[in-house]
Length: 110
Length: 113
Picture (cartoon, rainbow over the protein chains, first blue to last red):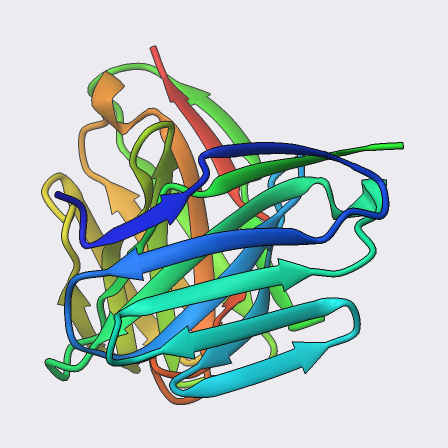
């Protein structure tokens, strides 16, 4: 079992829909990261959180430390949101290892 | 955007040849990382650096070495490239380590034939 599991692996939705991507992890963590990778490869950090909730524009990230679960929500989705969304965690063992999920491929249809 | 460049951006090389990839930053961040990205595996840490001449191994370090002689440059060397090292390689930087935001370079696509 991977330390970081994302669901769904693929998601297709209509423009305007509310999107939820889930991330579950099995280790104690000091931080959880959400990243975005557009076709063509560039990776951008969206959020880094260790508790609670963060919001940036139409994107919201939440984390539940007790349940070892995080969600990334996109409100009023747009075709430009089409990308791969990657969850990653930093364990609390004090090393520098980031463990990544395999990503969720999101496609928003106009 | 964080000032991170990678060179080369694309490279095709033959099995058994040495290859060096360069990551250059203009942000003066302490931490630098090399990852590889492969279908079905996601991103995996190869090596990282926490300062000049200070480096450590990640989870897939076999066959790779690194050097950091200046704050701004982090080199990844494949001493004798193998086809299993065909991948996309990303460099990342962070001001304070992996519990803080990471900024990624544009990636290098390496093909070993």
